[in-house]
Image (cartoon, rainbow, N blue to C red; front, side, top):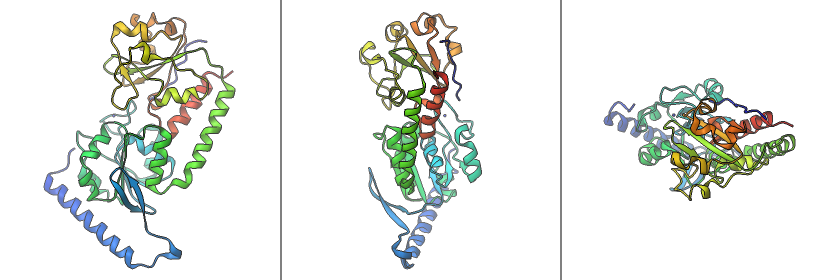
Length: 339
C-alpha cells in the first residue's frame, strides 16, 4: 500500500485594580442572584443549582448554565458537541491553532453561531476578559499549559463564577467527556455519544485491512527532536480498538521518562533506528514537520516503515482527541485502510 497523507490541521488585563474590581463586582452579582433564586419557589421541585464533586470539594453550579467560560480549548470541543452555551473560550489547540487567535476549524462554525468570544491568549489567564464575559460557570483544567494557569488563578476565577477544574488525572477522552458533561449539566447526552462511538469502532474494524504489525506512533515536534507516543496514550489505544497493535517503543527506548501528561517521550537521533524500527508507522505532526517533509530527511528514510511506504500521517487532532477528534480519526482510518 502506498503512503497516504491524511491532512490536519496553540494580554494580560488592564491592571490589578481593574481585575479585582471586576471580579468583586461579578461576585456581588452572583451573590445577589443566589439570594434571589433562593427566594423564588422552585417549580415542580426543580432546583436552580446542583452540586458537582471536584478536586476542591463540592461546588454549587447552575443547573442549566447559560454562559460558560472555557479555559482550555481541549475541553471546549466536548462542550460544543454537547451543545452547551459557551460565552468565551480559549482557542489554543495543540498543533492546530496558536497565539494568533482564531477558533479551531472543527468547532469554529459552532462558536461563531453561538457568538462565542475568543479568550485572549497569554502567559497568564486574562481574568478581566473572563469577568467581562459575565459567565455563570467556568470550566477549565484537563491537560496542558492552560490547566496549570487555571490552577494558579483558581481563587480569582471562583470570585467571578462557580469554577470546575477537570483534574489532569482524568486522561482519557471518555473521562473528560463525562466530567465536562457533568459540570455543564449535559450528562444525559453522554450515553448516546458513547454508543455512537462503539458503533463506529465496530464499523471501522469490520471494514479495514490493517497493513501490518506492530505499529509505531511518531510525534513530529517543532523542535525536530524524535518523539514517540507510548502504547498507553489515547491515539494508540484508540487504533488498537480497530486492530492496530502498538509497538513496545517504551522498552526499545529503555523506558524513558514520559513528558508532561504522560503521552509522549523524546529520544536522541542515535536511538531512532532502534526505537523506530516497526514495519508500520503513523506520523502525527504537532507543529513539526509533515510526513512529506520527513520523507526528504535521510535520518527517517532508512527506517523500515519509510523504506517500504508503510508510513501514514494523521492530524494533530488525533493526538489528544476530544470526542469529535476520535470520531474524525476513525473516519480517516476507515477511508485510508478500507478493504
